[in-house]
Image (tube, rainbow, N blue to C red; front, side, top):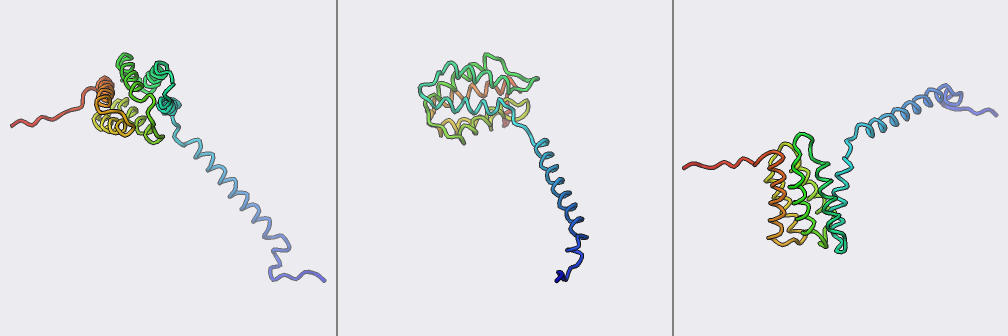
Length: 175
């Protein structure tokens, strides 16, 4: 007994072939979109993740502070924009103070990310140093750095910002 279908064109294949083409076309389109998104997605600079890794490496009390300080300085110089790089001396002073302050301190990934973001903001040619420095200082205090040391390290960060783009404008009221 032959099959009787309420949809004779489905069994005969007249709808299946066009549907295969539609499904294949949609699949190819989806793959193309996924590839395009991957190619157009913003790339993180490798030195940014290196910076966070170095900051997190300072958690280890037995880590080589001079080596990590040097590594920090190199990473900061590589992050600085070409037209407004700070001097290597100012960056080395900051890196030295920061590595002393953070060595052996318990720091979360989120805190390392906040420190990294503040440093990156200060290294940009435009913007205000004060906001980034304030966030940086608060994060240092949250990590367990004492107030006096946090102030010294933050001052060093501000020096980098001043070399990169000059001092922040401070409006003085005349009375």
